[in-house]
Length: 388
Image (cartoon, rainbow, N blue to C red; front, top):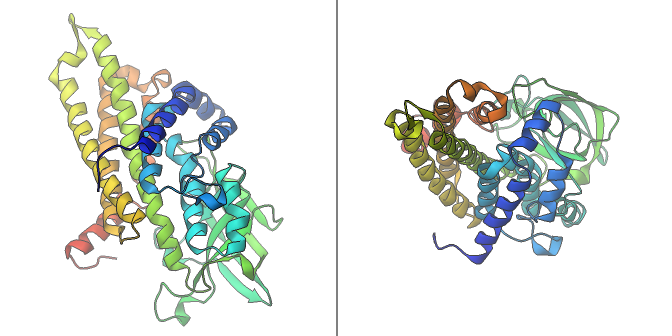
């Protein structure tokens, strides 16, 4: 790894900061209150080239990697966008772009990648199910072959963007689990058109991040051409694994980004707010908890850089992505918690935004992999017996 900043990285950082300055806390406070998707922000990300960071140049992208994407996400989050800085990039520009780039047919790449890069196509990712939860190997959504098509039936939950996406990459079972030797066998991924009349989408009322909807998705006899399989039939598990590592890196960027946004806002407040004839920031009871969390975030960000570097080199990085995600989330949550404490009662007021960042960052301990499952994977890599 080389920590010397390049011209390209500085350009990404500055562009992200400029975008965040235009779409700062007030914008997201209003969108959250109204429950509206920010079409303007989505278009701005396209104009900035961020939707195409991971897409090869021959498909109208920038041909960069997760190091650059992680930098863009963290900067967007930290400079004013909060969770939106990762949320609006991680599924389409991250997971879908990587999956199609690495495993798509040439026809799939030509169809989808330029549209992703230009912000003209939005993807949802259909993984989670009500009964399977974190245990994706227990996926119950079935895809049964019928000639040159597959017929899909099942239900997904917490599928972000499914109310507005043009496409969904959906995880299915093409061979029942009881008929395969390993649980990872018999899984296939399909690219589905979301305008199919046999797909029903129902938004879920949720705690935060209401500037996009997360939904239940019901599929009843949805017919999909066999050519829409992403990767090989019955071997989609490894495609999915490759798509999950960028998601974890993205959420690590969100953890440190949101945490830094809250901490920097609290530091500014702590310099201005006076109690007993002194700025409250002069008291170590206020400054030290935020400082400690900030130091932990800086360390976690380095681990994210390592995970992203290994990913970009094509090296195994599951351990690093889980460590990065787990530590960034823990540090970010502590930073937001202590920042809210520095505001006192005003930390509970919507006008100071920290309460919204608290609601946003708490999702990162539940998704895309829970903290417990991240630690399960890490402990197994350290030599402990498998616990799941």
